[in-house]
Structures are given as C-alpha cells and as structure tokens.
Image (cartoon, rainbow, N blue to C red):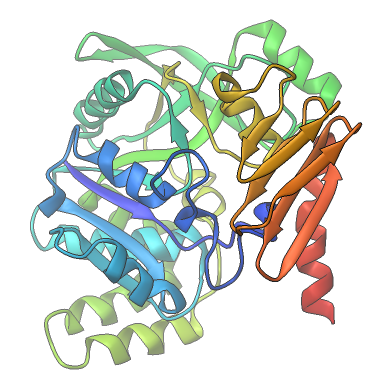
Length: 352
C-alpha cells in the first residue's frame, strides 16, 4: 500500500498560532509532535515510509524537509495551491511509476486518530476493496448532530474486506443545519465524511481523465517531465493554468465508478477549531475543567483553554468558557463556543 499525506492547508481556524508560514499541520497541538509527524507515524502501521509521500506548498517545503530529515518519505512540492484534485493527481503520477494497481490511501495531515490500530485495520480493508477498481472512502459513525462536517448517505452492504463490511454510497451531503443533522443522526444511514480516500493510481488517473480533462492534460505534461531537469518548470507551467477544484466536486460527484464506504469508529477528529481541541484533550483538564497548554495562573476560572507558545504567564481570574491563544506577536481571546469564527481575523488581516 502507498500513502499520500496532503499537507497544503492554511489552518485559519487556529489563528494566531496557525499562520501562512506555519499552518496547523506543523503545530504541536494534539501532542508534543506536530500533526504532520503524528500522521506520518500512523502511516507506518500500514505502509512503508518508502512508499509514503507528503504533498506541500512551496512556502512550506523547506520546513517540511527539515522536519522529516533522515526519513525516506518523498516530499512533493506544489508551486501554488490548486485544491485536492491537483494534489492527488500529482501524487498519483509518482505512485503510478512504481505500481499502477496498488492501493493508495489519501490522508489529510491535520487530523487526530485515537485508536491507531483500529484505523490501520480499516485502511488495509479499504485498500483490499479498492483493488477491484472502486473508489473507497472511510466514513465516521456520527456521535452528535455536527454541522461542521460533510456527510455520506450510505446504502446497502456492498461487500466485505478483511472481515469488515463496506456499503454503497447513495450521495454526498454538504454541511447541514442543526435540524437536518439531527435527522441524519437519528436515521443511522449517514456518516461523517472524513476526507480519507483509497483507490489505485490507475483508477484515479482514469477518473481524472474522464471527469477533469484539463487537469488530465496538465498531468500528462508533468508525467513526461518526471526525472528530467524540466520537472519543476513543468509543474509550475501546469499549476499556472489549471483550475482549483476539490476531488469531491471534480471526481466524486461525477464518477460512474463504484463508490464504497467503510463505517469506522476509531476516535477521529478533524480538529477543526480551538473548541474541538479542548474537547479532544479532555483527559488533561485541571480540577475546574481548564485545559492549560502553557504557563498559566488560574484563580476562580472554569472551562477555559489556554494555548501559549511564549514564556509569558497567562493569568485568568473569574472567567469561564474562553479560549486564550498567546503567541510572540498576537494574543487572541474569544468565547470558546465561537472559536469556529476565529478565521475571520485572518480574513480581516488579509483585507488590511
């Protein structure tokens, strides 16, 4: 099996710790390792690191090389962001040179998995199902009426791989409102869309050719340049002209290939906000349910999150339900339940 880690996101919902030069996937927010390092450690449970790739933007290439120094993981550099279809297509070109019909698992670099062994078993089962030429996704059994995730509407059991059943996919659903999310949860027929895909290089490149012919044409130009002095220039030329489109819109909603989904429950989170991080690290709360990731002084304060990358002490007195992020050049204070809106600060700064 091959693994491709997509590490090109901007992580604006973790401002001010996450910045353009150091986005979320490079932060140590779920452990004492960066999220990219955590993801790569999980990959080792089902794919050799010699068969793993990390796709990053040019701005983060040097940092990624330093972070993964000494590891055999391939680093693929995109000159600019063109969304997940181009990212996956570029990686598939490189895998295809080694194995057209081996499964590839596509993983975001900034997710959290609690039960790594269960995760690895599901990925291997999905890889087995993908050998037939199908496109396979991993869906997460919902535990609450979440409005921040896309959903997968599942159909009947379509088969079994390595002892795990997989289901047909009826449709993909965008982020719902609360009432709709409650209906999805009650029906039992919907899964959270984890953004994890499994397919072979042959399958995905053929689907890009059918569904996204302009991207296919560009990938062919890049393929011809792999291993030559013109490679970087070819990638730059192609990325200058191709559209930015996700694999979901570009392929998943157009393909006529079978699409299967595995239902999983291995403690997954996309760690999409400071509030999500607070929930994720509940085992580390103090007696008043504060999550303190940095130097702090607490007096009569409850259910707060403090994240600090400085040596300053952050002092809280009589406050509740806040997120306080202290970085060398910015301090952000917000209601914890408003942390999804933190990305508005990044938008405001861009406007200015």
